[in-house]
Length: 322
Image (cartoon, rainbow, N blue to C red):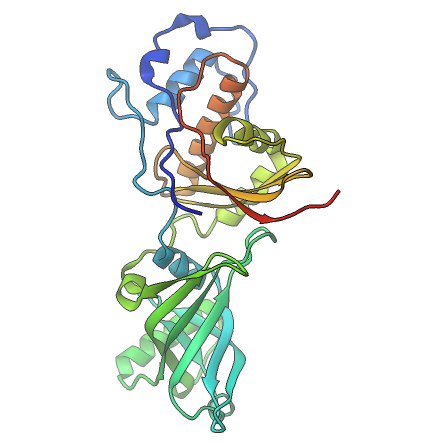
């Protein structure tokens, strides 16, 4: 699915209109503050958090609405600890074995291999395939192509040994420590999807997503406690020509979140909904979700006419039979 810049918030001209005041309490999403607040204050705070100058109408526009493949690959490697290491045997056959790994600050995989792991290999060229399951609905993956290398520097070995111990809580023989020197990376969004090749320099210079450590927790909480908001997002932020029977959030990152939509008539789709601004931590992600939930609720109740562009591009991933 291609990137799409989307405006999620209306202009600030709505803030000055007093006609938005009402006496009925505003329905709050799960992450909202515990104390009830008026609609005017809520709308003002929602809009204020998306602009830097309050005196002029402003819209937030993200240059890219999803992380680059290099970032996704780095995130997958940071969140995973097992993969399939493949090399060629002396007979020329490709052979893959399951391995555990850690990564250094540049995403270089660190392995602990014994003699039995290496006896089948005729050369150092290898690949490491790693998968990350998201919400049981999608499995992004990356395959690192490179060569197995045995570090000789004692300081480097000591650092890698410490990294392994921190990751797995166990001592290892430094003689068994190897690294995969990254030459290029193939990043895939899911099974049966086309991959994107990432250069070694792009991979090393990319940063893993800042939400990676708590993305799964946020997704689980929203799917468990905010299904009304999830369905409302489909109606307000996405340009649909069919009725959604089921909707779930799949993943969240610094630029937005992915959703899975199901329709008995049309099939199964994925859609990307950008945040109105980039977030860098768990608090920022929850704040963005609250702001978008509030605005979607007000648009649904016709308290104002939204003037943002809806997401138009959906990716069909399957068909559903009744």
